[in-house]
Structures are given as structure tokens and as C-alpha cells.
Image (cartoon, rainbow, N blue to C red):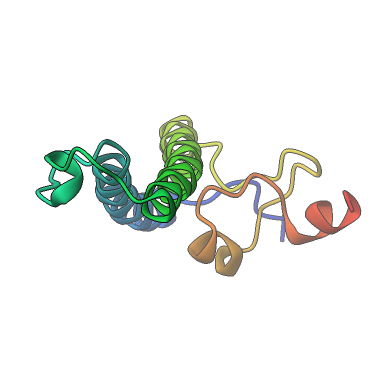
Length: 125
């Protein structure tokens, strides 16, 4: 029996559903982070108070920086998921870009945007 070179349309549909769910959650998480950075839903004393305590201001700045970093990571994650959807449409999803072999289903269920098999990923270290 020949080795399987790509996932079936049914398998790709399963992965697409997983990716769409993760994409929806990732976009919602990004919106939460974005609002934390801009404080668009803020109604606390920072909006109106003319004086700030130094420590509070420092903590708010640090919090915004952390939220900014998380937002950047979230954007990157969203882009990877969107790229995975394109690979599904092209029927190249789940094929390791190093070895050309199929990436294990278990790996794709956990990391649906993966482009490397475990072996290829480990050999990069």
C-alpha cells in the first residue's frame, strides 16, 4: 500500500472546523487585548483625575506594554491560522515543509497551524 501523501477532503474539513474555532477565539482575545491597550472601555479615575500616583502610572504602562506584546503575538497567531486555511483550500495542509510527509493528526489537532512534523521540528534545535 502506498504511503498517504495528503489528507482526504473529510479530514481537511475536520481540521478546517478546528482552525475556524481557534480563529474565532483568537480574534475575540485580540479585541480584548486591543481594548486593554487603548482603555476604550475605561471609566476609572485615570480618565478624569489630574494627578497620578507614580507607581500606578508605572504599573499601567507596564500593563499596556505586556498587553501590546500579547496583542502582537495574537496577530501572528491569527495570521498563521489564516495561512493554514489557505493550505486547506490548496489541499497542501498537513504536509511537512521539510520532509514532505504528512504531519501527524494528533499534532495538527493541538497545533493546527503547524507546518513541520515533530521530527523536522526537533532537528531544527
